[in-house]
Length: 181
Image 1 (cartoon, one colour):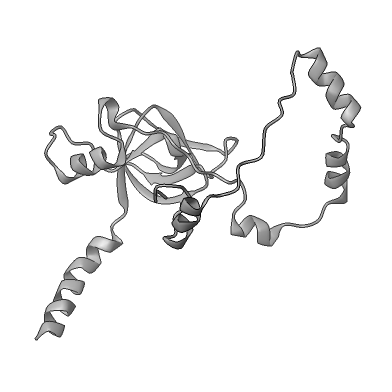
Image 2 (cartoon, helix red, strand yellow; image 1 turned 45 degrees about the horizontal axis):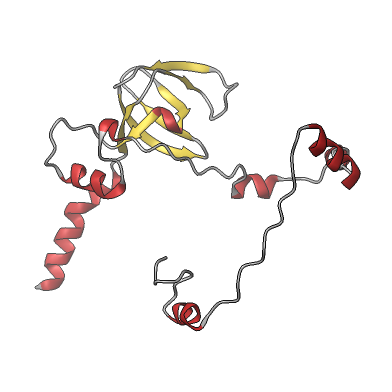
């Protein structure tokens, strides 16, 4: 009997998992055919347009609106739907995630530049390595540059050797004193 309840629940929830994420345009932006700033413009979005988020690639979102389909910058879209009230579950989640307050927007982007596909298709290019080596500076050149711009060296002491209290945090998996993570 329990098996059939779980199976029924899974079947009912399955269509929800297939739905794409929704969002709202935070600003006017161009929709592009590919996730590149120099890609062909295929349309545009206007602030507060409702969008369907189909995929993410680096700092780009593949979206679909009533008028356009393509790629926009990640920071042009707020994920989730906008609500006018203050009592919905998304408002509680916004409070917990730091998105509560005026605008409810936290702008962070985690883009590393290279993904697995880029690394797999990478090829050695000796001319690029030579160009990179051309940027090498000697210690004397670095000192001259720093002096010309008024930069001063600062000596930083090494961190102290961990105490017994800090090493006990290692046993609970915490990298910092006090047990935080």
